[in-house]
Length: 589
Image 1 (cartoon, one colour):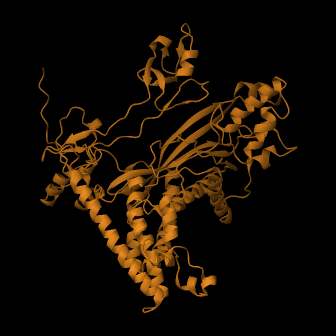
Image 2 (cartoon, rainbow, N blue to C red):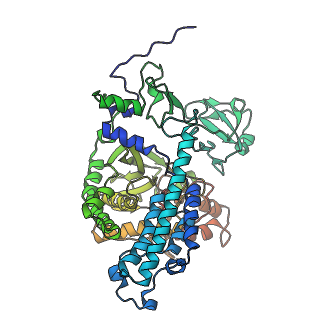
Image 3 (tube, rainbow, N blue to C red):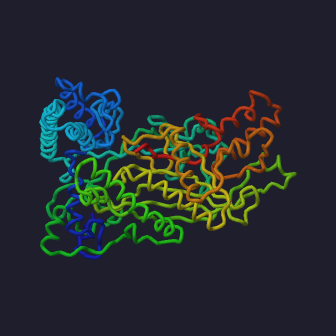
């Protein structure tokens, strides 16, 4: 058996981005791994509800159980003095519906309830005394809860099989998502714990129904290979993947690779030495300089005119929004503006980069092409696909928080796609800091893109507000468990709020919907509707034409029924493809 090559201490070999961190960044990263107060929604609700229950048992609870009604109580100046009202009933509702994402969020609202009472009611008054007693009991129960969490963390870290950094033994990934590669598949997604068939170096999957329909004698033609039915192997979608481990070469402790920010894919020959964050911090304090980066940071990724326009557009607006949020925090929490601004703007720099730009062609489907051949309807539409990513530096590491895919049909395109842009994919995860900045930043990015497209000569922009179905995701398939999927109406409002703001800035002119523009009685002409990649219309028009050819007209046909659903959105899944703009991860935070 050959002897493995010895490890070398080569300063140029850097397989962990933490090797490039400063002392402050390493300390920040280690602090972020302290799991004492980082709780799942279930545990957070359980711990905080026990504290709230103790307050509900107090004799003065009724005073703070519901919002203050200034009219009923004769307090005309209440809202002049109290800028952000809060009560324990609202706290309970937020807790039960999963609106709190940390213990600190819960703590701030409880304290706000009593601080408002102490602010409005002068010392010596009955309500001031009640608030003082309730606040004292809360602080006692809250500290008991924190101490309980600290003890649990200490016990967890005593486990020799646990990670030396985070204290947990196993970190499990979200189960992988598999889709059937059969173009005619009616379901597409292969559900959890179902059997399916895989082949071609595990690249191509077939659900059981599509596998049973395959002909043993007919080869399966794929883009890069040809398979037979017998080449497909049966599997069950029940795999659970765990985070890999790495051993520190200094202290010999084992840690999760993600906790140590170690990239095993770049260290396949196992030739480099590795220092865990704790050992690296000691080395830095003794004078060892940061190593060279082996991979670019988000800021070092190539810039384009597109990404620079978006970044330059939102930067001053984000700075202004920081000041707005800081002013609000200063008034509510009775702290200085400078301190509030420091806390609000401490989330890290936001970086925006364009990461893809590819030219593609969309072929018109057979029935649409043949049905309107007499009108010289185009056989294909060329377009450019662009992807924009938003990063934020969180605890020293660049994290992707938002992704946007757009399809651009230029002036060389034939009608109806000429000078049209289509916002096709949009998705995010809620880790942006501060959390209140998410909707503001994402709206500003979309507004900036519409302005960018307008200045480049595009005349129309199409957005279809379509949230993913339960279990489906568009870009980030592993969402935080407490991140909610928006409903149809909420997502539509999310887009309309953004578009109305763009109208106020004279970036867009007419704001309308697809039904009024194309499908209103007496106006329908299928050849006037933009034909866009992955859009609902391109699939639905095939069904409508098929019904017409088969003589199916009237209430039971696709043409008379489904086209009306386009105005308000249809929650059912179209068997021929998804509908409209893929908009995920935009919960109401």
